[in-house]
Length: 416
Image 1 (cartoon, rainbow, N blue to C red):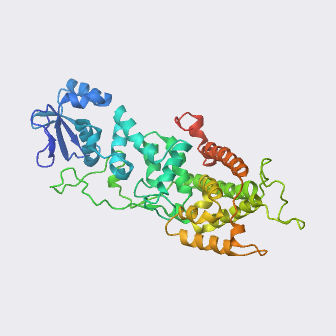
Image 2: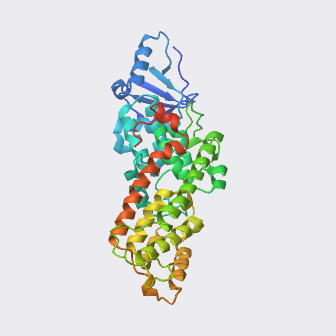
Image 3: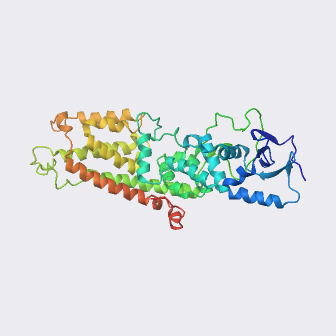
C-alpha cells in the first residue's frame, strides 16, 4: 500500500485524535492530515459516506502512519474550518458576515460535500447580510444608518458585511443566485468608476494556517478559496458589469421620475385640511398652502441628496423614498436630523444647504412660516404611495438587473 511521506504531510495539532480510525489528507499535494473517527466523518455528509464505502473496496489505498487515507484537494485552511465545525458544532466557528473568509470556506465546502445543516446555517448568515425580502433589506439599512454604526460614504457598514463583489462569485459557486439581486443593488450604489475598477482585497490580519506554530505552504484548491485568492482585485465579468450598470441607470431614472411625479407635482389629498387654500403660485392666493410648500421643500431636499451630497443615493430609490417619508413626517424644520442619516462625512454639506434654503425669507415670509408641516392626510396619502412604489421597485429588481433567467429557471427560490 502506498504510504504518504511523513516529512511532507503534517499532522494537525488539534484534529489528529489518538483513537481516530481514518485519516483525511487536505491539499493538492497533500500537506495536512487529520485523524478522525469514521462516525464523525460519515454522519453529516453523504459524499463522505460514499467515499468511505469506496475506500473499503480498494485493494491498495493510500495510508498514513498505517491508517487508510481519504484524499481531498481542498485548501487546508478551508478544510480545517470545516473539520472544526463537524467536530465541535457551529458555535465553535464564527460564520457571521463580519468573518467572511470563514463563512465562504464553510459554505463552499458544505455545498460541495452536501452537508445540509451547514449549508443552511452559513446561507442564513449570508442572507442576513444580503436579505431576500424588502422588510429584511429595510432592517439591514436601518442598522447601517444608526448612529452607532460605522459608515462609509455609501452609508453601508463595510466592517459588518462582506463587500458585494466578494459575494457575487461565492453565490454562483454555491448555487445561490437569488442572493445576486440585493448584491447587485448594493453594487449599483457605487460610482461607475469603482464598479469597473473592482475591489482590492484587504489582507487578513490573522494567520491563515490551521497550525499557527508552523510556516507551511498551501496549494491551490479545486474550488477557489476566498482566503487565498491569488488576484488582489476582484472584478465583475463583462456581462455582469453590463447588467449592473444597466440596472443602475434604470434606478437613477426611477429616482428622478419619483421626485418629479410623486413629490414635486403631487396632488393634495382630497382630505387635506388645507384644501381650501389656493396654490401659492396663484396670484390671487393670500396665505401659503402648507402641504404644497412642504412637498416643494421635500422635492428640493431630495434633489440635493440625489445630486451627490451623499454618494449612491441617486441609484437607490428604496432609500430615497423611505427618507422622503421621514423628512415629511419630521417637517422641514427637523430635516437636519434626517439628512444626517445619510453619512457622517456628507451630512454637514447637506445641512448647510438645507438651512440656507430655510433661512431665505422669500416673499417676506419668516422662518416660522417656512417650517409649517404638511397635514396628516397628505402625509398618510404620500406614505401609501411610497409603500406601493417601493414594493414595485423591489419586485422589478431581478428584471432591471437582467436576472430574469434565474427566476424563470427556478434558481431564485426565496426571492420575494
